[in-house]
Length: 93
Image 1 (cartoon, rainbow, N blue to C red):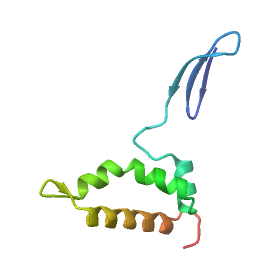
Image 2: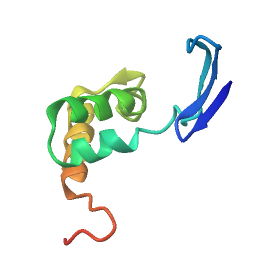
Image 3: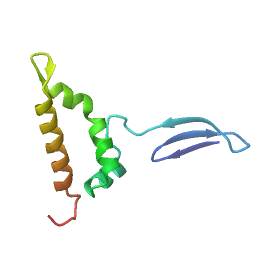
């Protein structure tokens, strides 16, 4: 049996065991649920967002081939501030 739903596709044996699973979500995006939790201030979700963008933050923090810690911290602070300012459609500002 093959099951399709919003997060992926699975092939199930006649005994109900998952034989194959393919995640169809885009791994380059932060999951919607994580963004919702992060915008409400959940520390674990905020950390997950920071981890997701950590390589890009470090790359943007490079100065003369070295990571500038002050620049890195500033980018992280601005990202966290943007999370708290983010509003989904229909939310009051």
